[in-house]
Image (cartoon, rainbow, N blue to C red; front, top):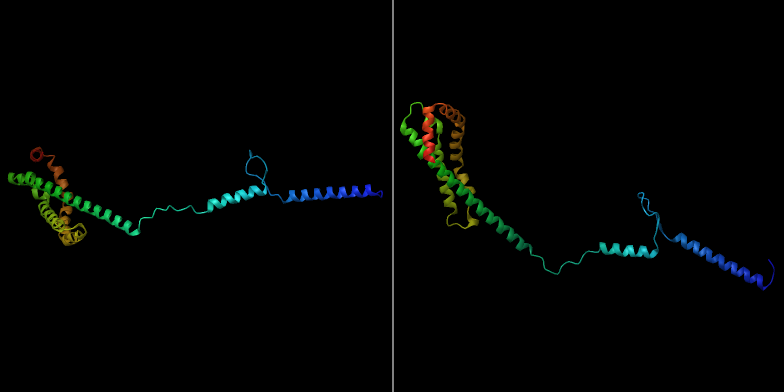
Length: 216
C-alpha cells in the first residue's frame, strides 16, 4: 500500500482484471448447458450456445408452418358425388344381370332334370321306385323359377337402370317362394335317405345310371 502514482495505477489494473473475471464468470453461468443422460455410449454433456438455440427454434418453426397448398383446384364435391353415383349404378346393373343369368342357368338345369330323369322314370312305372317322393315338388319349383325370371325380365327390359325396381319383384313373389321351398326343404332329408336306399339296389341303381348317361 505504498502511496504514489505507481500504487494508484496498480490498483486500477487490479480492478480492471477483477471486473473482467466477474464478467466472464457471469457469462459462463448464463450460457445454457444441456446434459445428455440417456444411455451409455452418449458423448457426454452437450453445451449449446445462444446461436444454436436460435437455429433450433427457426427449424422447429419451419416444421410447424403449414405447407403451401398446390394451386391446382380441387375437384368439386358435386363431381365426386356424381362419380360415386355412376359407379354404384354400374355395379347395380352388373348384379342384376348376374342375378338373371343365374336364374336362367337354374331353370335350364331343372328342365334337364325333369325331361331326362323324372319323366323317363315315371314312364317306366317301376313299382319299387317312388319318383314323386324322390324329387318332391321340383316341378313346382321349376314353374316358380320361370315366373320369377319373367318378372325380372319385365322389370328390366326397355327400362333405364335408375328406374329398374327389382325389390318389388321379390316382394311380389315372396309368398309363393316361401310356400314352395318349405315343401321342397321339408322332404329333402327323406329324399336323400331314399336315394341312398335305391343305390343299394342294383336294378334301381341301373335306372338311375341310364338317366345320368342321358344327361351327359
